[in-house]
Length: 468
View 1 (cartoon, rainbow, N blue to C red):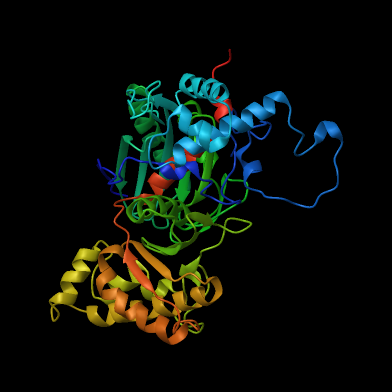
View 2 (view 1 turned 90 degrees about the vertical axis):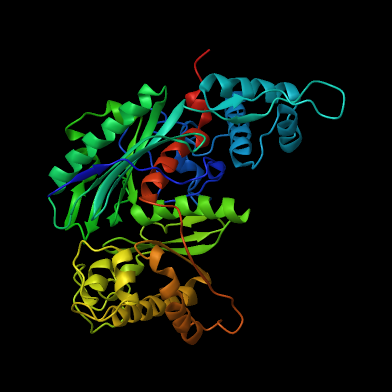
């Protein structure tokens, strides 16, 4: 496998307001196999926050699932509330603002803010003098270069690592371009672990501390948050990816936990951040991620809906023509065999190393080389429209965001997709469809993974407050 390392810059805005929301549903939030603030035995286990109410038998008092509030648990709950208010707000809040929003006394808010300052979760800006008399307001913002999340991604054409701090700023990152189809997971994950440690060490040199690591992979991830069940385009099956990622470099550089999540879900998380900031409101959309294969995720009001096992959104393996060509997953007629990158480039007469830009050039200047690029794109747009129509009829979601290799092709794919949506979506006479491009840039799942790791801080701020 030839590999090329290059430095990249994520084109995000530097804000992580989405950290103020529980942006991934159950099936994605896990303490993984690590120890520390998100271990299975911790009272701050983030999984408890997203499971929702369940009917269970009453346990013994000492083993209660949701024990009644004591002074300490009340303080933890208030600290969580204050933290989420600060991170979810589009503008900096002062202590007085927090007191009004939460109903807590000014003195209580000040004590909690002092804890967050000591933990390196928030920072104070310069005081602002308002029109009324009294003390100047001190705006509170997420802290810079203190606590950081490490996102790692292995995909068919590259591996990457990126570290974000609580403001959304990139502290360090690297991308290695290579062909990982039908690769050896031991070799690839060892290399990914070494790349991740190099990037993490750069962030530590900048003054940050890595709280945890999330690995993005294009496939079905087990509910234990450490195992990959199947990644057809990588050729991997039943792999303990967390063990292999850490095997050659140890655990220390990865923070308190290491867990694995589907690549499309994490990319959708980063895209939801991008679109929320652009439109000024939470977004509902279907995200379509095209690398070598096709992944997808459902986002409802800014929250990634992953399903009970975290497997929702496998649009690439939705059958478009059950009697169609065989797919890498073992089935036939899947969307990927018509609109996946490999299938699309092959039908257009291009090699596997060609880009979406190369395909666009062939469409605009036909008549050179083998294949029919216009027919290839038309077939892909038809297949996408058919698959998305089925998803829309089930989900009642009418916004589509095309990412990855599909992004640059949005203009030519849009009318083809919309034609099928208009024919096949039952509610089409009353619904408005929107097909748009994600402009988030290279390796959005790496960004989403780092964001997911940082949720450990916002979901359990008490765990990061220094002992008094």
